[in-house]
Amino acid sequence: QVQLVESGGGLVQPGGSLTLSCAASGFSFRLYSMRWYRQAPGKSREVVASISSFTGTANYADSVKDRFTISEDNAKNTVSLQMTSLKPDDTAVYYCNAVHPSTLSSYWGQGTQVTVSS
Image (cartoon, rainbow, N blue to C red; front, side, top):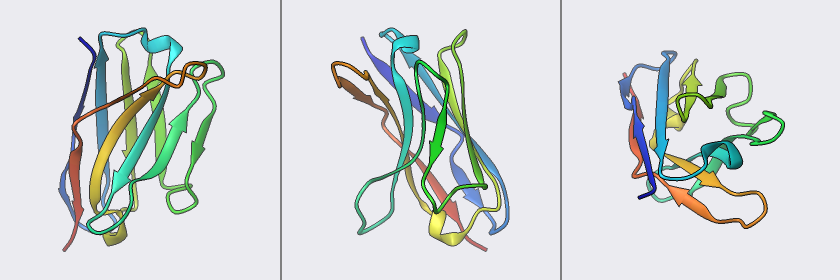
């Protein structure tokens, strides 16, 4: 059974930091590229960070570049998103996504809420 389970969300003040984690199981984690998406109320879901399954290369949305860092641990089948200098605009539900680069089969986690507010 495929599972992606996010954790680490919560309430943080502007300027603060938070680290999200995603634990994967039930599929060949090393073969999949991993992404973090977010969806704010009334907005479309957007990708904020991705990491390639083959090269380990990370890419970021312009809105989070230099503030967020994606990393993965193939030994533990986990992917993390370190978020710093958080802004109210970062408030959203954050989703972990796994996508196979060839077949494009895709799996989603249930999401974790991040709220940036004073």
